[in-house]
Length: 129
Image 1: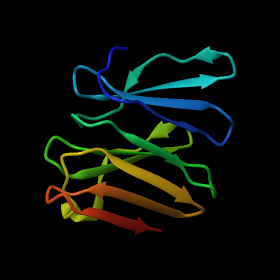
Image 2: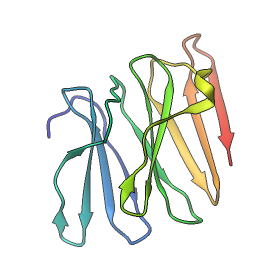
Image 3: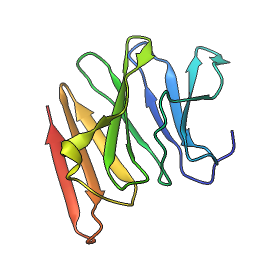
Image 4: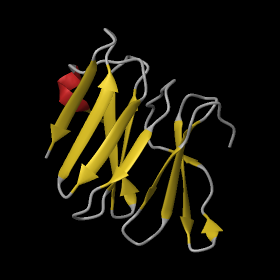
């Protein structure tokens, strides 16, 4: 895996380590360390692309691994691991949130908080349950 963007990581509910990176193809890839073995880099399903680093977090209730990124269109997208499969990228905030920059995410119980710098250089936070 080759990347020129920062990577993100999260620890899943079973103790597995997930690592996320944007490849030179602008697609988001993931890799999983389960014990001592890496599964190998795999692109997320779908055609979503980004020029920004991704952010990842884990919900405390249910242990969903969640990944957020800024698409090439500046809109924010979310995917999460539902058991053993990644869910399709979901447009956040009906597409009203817009940024060309990397975002930060944090989660607690059933709540996810996203903080990002908008295209107007203002800092925004959105919390979703």
